[in-house]
Amino acid sequence: MPDLETRELEYFVAVAEELHFGHAAARLAIAQPALSKSVRRLEARLGVKLLERSSRSVRLTPAGEALLHHGRHALNAVDAAAEKARRAGDQQSQLRLVIKPGGDANLLSAILAAYAGQPDARQVDIVFGGATDRADYVRDGRADLALLYVPFDDMTGLDHETLKIEGRVAILPPPHRLASRAQVTMADLARETLPRWKGVRWTGAPETEPGPEVTDLAEALQMIKLGRTIAILPRSLAQPQHPDLVYRPVTDAPNNELVLAWAQDDRRRLVASFVVAAAQAAGRT
Image (cartoon, rainbow, N blue to C red; front, side, top):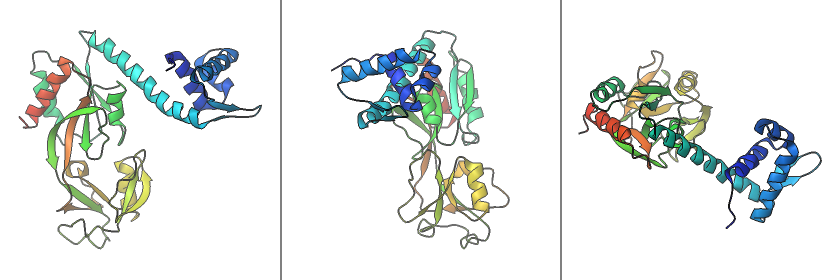
């Protein structure tokens, strides 16, 4: 099996993303002839054509598409490994915890206080991520831990400790046919339109319809106010309640979990210490 050098892979990914050798060379700060030679050498070593070149365009072959997909993951893994190695060797390193604004179920203060009482406690930097990218922060080394919601967040490559189990609520516009009820069921919500979260594969129930794409809760609430969609969210994410909307518990919706997640291969003592403190603060031990 041919060996792949990290630099060659980085060069190819740049060309594949730019689909222009000149732009990729400028991005990499190298000469264009050297970049072209590197890609040709990579194709020769792999025995496949990665790019279709003409005088006017560059496009990926099926082999090139595959290498771009897996190459990105490989480069991210290399970067994450290097970052974790640097931080493991730094005795004064800080912990970085990524959360979604408002996505801590009011546990963050208690968690930080419990961790501060640990004899080996370090400073904890709070990083704010988006609605769908917080797990990526841990996978690529930008954060050590994340507060995530299961089953909504992708837990691939992560271990986790459950901090809270809670039900879900439906968020409705006041004119909605169900707004006058004290509670609703999943059957009541059949054939309703739910928002599509940007960057997340549609996971709505089969009997529901995909609605407008939104990037965060603020956009989702605006679409609900306009009558374009409804939302079914973990109870803690529906706080504080918007005064112009109606919130109703969904009595038979599957429970969700607020979890503290970290990389499966991260066995550092300072991470384990934070997990223990978080579980204690959440009353899970």
